[in-house]
Length: 193
Length: 116
Image 1 (cartoon, rainbow over the protein chains, first blue to last red):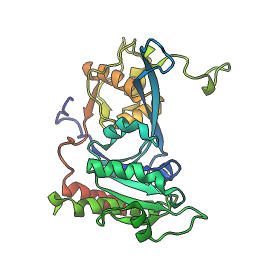
Image 2: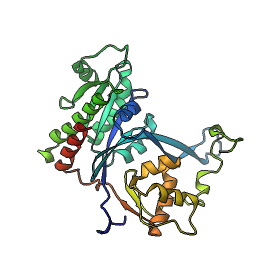
Image 3: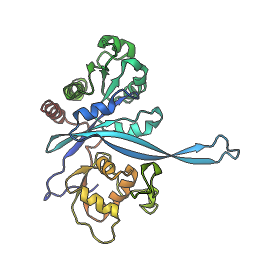
Image 4: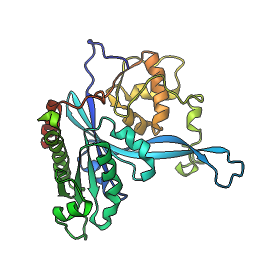
């Protein structure tokens, strides 16, 4: 990567936070609530080797899959830009998650109490990977409001993982979720003590 | 798009035809690497190169370039590699992944979010 010569204005450093959760948990809604730009969509085209089941010769075929990610941006200051990436909902695209999780500050796992199991794969993934995360319970209209402790118990979370209630449609609420995450990263990482 | 084709028709040109079959970029471009144009469009560039240079008049991430041009990231990386080789862009990779953001950076993020 070319370095930036001193005669040009320095480019900002970018950091990223991931927003994960099951299908329909409100990932893009949360990104859109805090982003300074309308959420954008980028696509990765992935070529997967697959063996055709009906193919008697067992010849490998290549299948092209498109994985879409929605993201938003928050300019923190002239030197720092924060990107929020909604992780692809489908569990089988772990390799895209790996690229997204690399270097991420941390992750917000959105939970929908009507479909709690939808966020299990995200939690498993970040626990295994050691990525700091919090759980934000998106309070949908018509869904019973849950006690965060009940959600914590249902998800069998480590006691240090914060669980907060939020309304992903509301800017202030989504801001609080992100602040809780970054504070959690600062407080739970020994290197920052 | 002309009157005979809408988005349902799918892409009219297969994406990698635009890169003349090249799928490898000459540089590594992270999704949040920041790109800025440092040179003007010259002869011999593809329309996509020119579009990228126009977009990157002010710094923009690879993910944003991909979204604005409605092209998969892999394709955008090939074009960015060409532009980097030609000396027409500069990029800033995100913080090295082996290094965690500094405490100062994270506190700046918290302040920035509160100020939104």
